[in-house]
Image 1 (spheres, rainbow, N blue to C red):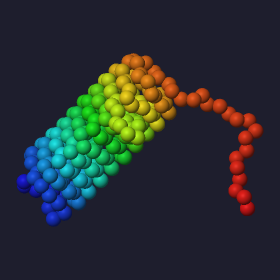
Image 2 (tube, helix red, strand yellow):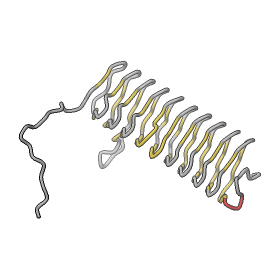
Image 3 (cartoon, one colour):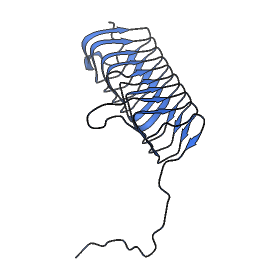
Length: 207
């Protein structure tokens, strides 16, 4: 590979790298195994890519860690994003800070912009995964699948308890924990009613 790096002395290649034209890799990156970078890919500083394929025009922002994963074209990932084995991201997908994706596919244009976990999930196109959304895929013994149709929106701090199917166009309200299939095109709310407790006193520290 010709090294399209900000500083070749601070690029650690521990395998084979195939890079298209106009690729840029910033300092402190580690590329392991077989790494393929399409035309115009940008890799920010201090990223680790191990056995990864990245499509043309995609930007990977600083401190991201990818392993055994595939990313489509014109996507944007990071900073501080993690792709674990089996992650397959389509074109124009956005993965933001502190988002982890494992053994999952995300369709074209889908987004998980902050603080989310997506595991063992098949996700359609143009979904929006709200901040704090968790796919609860593990019951302590086995992993279970989750399926999201196209154009699904999850509100902040949602929990999807697998196995579960969320229909296309569904919206899950913020703070909901859903453990049953969610119908397409509907708003689903699964959270306790808010109440005010009269006469309650906040505990104080003993002196």
